[in-house]
Length: 255
Length: 344
Image (cartoon, rainbow over the protein chains, first blue to last red):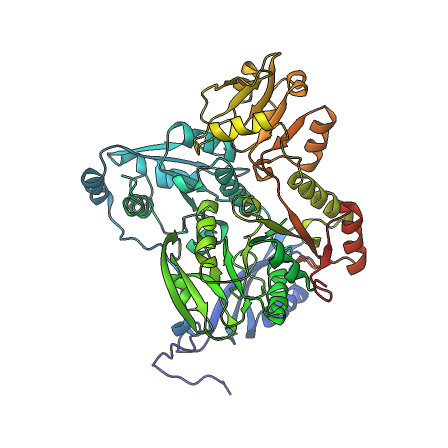
């Protein structure tokens, strides 16, 4: 007999994945195992799923990838729940203005261009993140900082050493430095980001500049821990970054 | 006397600096706080990152929480105030801004776990520590974040405790080498030439200025706003009369690599303090062997080194083997194992 009973009302202190009915805990996941397709591979997948806390695991799809690898899709019932009412996520606290509002805000509050220098730093060769924020064409219908009248946005590209980015920021008397970390190995983005903060401290510019980081594995909370002023994770655009920079500069009276 | 008693007697502010993430900073801090409580000393605690959350934001592993005894003074940003598991009395709302709201200076009303965070910049930390001390405490601890070492600067604290451990490498030899490198950097001799010192002190007024000084104490300013990537510019201003080159910021490979090794041998480089050095152990040894001379205006007092024999990757060293290897290599600095019997 099934342990779950059909209820229609959600209990926010114990939320579970929803499949067909409330609290059925249904989860679908996919992974590859480095073993040939067959009964043993399917059983290995089921056992793994059980260890992950999934009840009644079921291999619903499998495909031999050749050279002894198998791709599988597994269904199962999640046995855990999360108290949604106790969740506390810290976010960048600024009103998000769109591009036109930002331009108006700059006209109203600044009598000089706001200078922003950005790059994808260290070993990271991916420019997609910094391009999405800075380049004129932007991303997903949100134009980049280059298209913000009143702002000077310099995108230095990828694999830029922290030192070079800082030297550029000093040369241009930048108001903000944007650091993008898209794909890095073994948490090397963490040491690269703290190195950035440390170099700014050593150069004596840390309290004169806004230090922002962004990327798929960056959260505002992590940014705080690393010593940055703000962090921008997935689903944030140039509007978010510009709004934060402008309002923070005004707040800090650097207009 | 307990170790913390000696600390409080000698220093006002002590930073706990990590060689890497998971090197045992918080464990060391908790031990010191407990010892201070036993000794009847009042502590203030702040952090350069964020401390005391239960899971690590980077590795999502469990991490030690910070336990504060009642009456301690602590810095908490507004957004973390409501997360405190104990009563906090707000003494002052400061103007220091963090990603989690402005910093509040609080008094702990009832002993318990508190999430601690402080301002991002070292300069603001210094001011915050002064503010916190004005509420009457015997010692201020600054907990460093991740591997951020700038908090070791003499500008912010009187002495440091350096946390090192197995997390640095699977090789005991490498752990010892890296740790000794940092301690040796921090003990870089200070510039003894009083005349040169007073000139550099007078010229450095918080504005970044590189200064080349000749054998008659005349200074020349090459007019570059940063030495980063400007090694060859620096090289061009060094001539046979140059005695000192004062660099008020970071000292990196891109600077030293641009200076002719022969010229480098004939001058003495001067930095404000050892936290400005960003050069690895091997390269540093090589530079010293080639005759590079470097002095600092102020060096760093290393009050103790703590070792953590456990690495989150799963391996660990023998407690005594690690402790004694680090202690033997360092000589006169006390070395404690944070995971075995604490700091006595």
